Length: 181
Image (cartoon, rainbow, N blue to C red; front, side):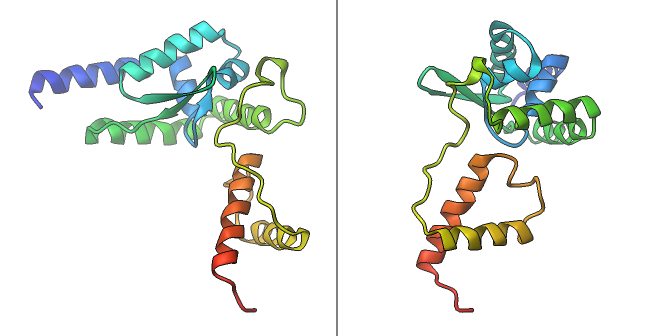
């Protein structure tokens, strides 16, 4: 890569990070993909404004998108450039320590996993939806016990979808690799 291309890439990257709303958006995507409707709900901004910021992040190569029906889901893409990838990783770690960013993230988790989902996002698919496994009540209880005592709270169980993934993984793992106790 020529010096000019490198400098242009770095300039675009830093300009993408030079906005509070874009930093809040990146903070919300730090663990998984997020539907645009969740951004509008959590950040209290209009959908066009959020979409403009996401387009800017996509143009800088920091975010990628996928369509699911009429919904757009976004996730962080680590840049190929070592320096920009390191800066992005460090910046995301730094955002975790800020109270306002933690508040945004907690709001995302509560909205994502709420019993009564806000009307504005009620029809939006949650990220990474997985089918419910067909397993016995006893096996579900064993998996619940395993998860309760082996996984620190909040890491994998922040959303129901994560729990479904673990259920499915353990169900199929136990089916193919029975353990003798």
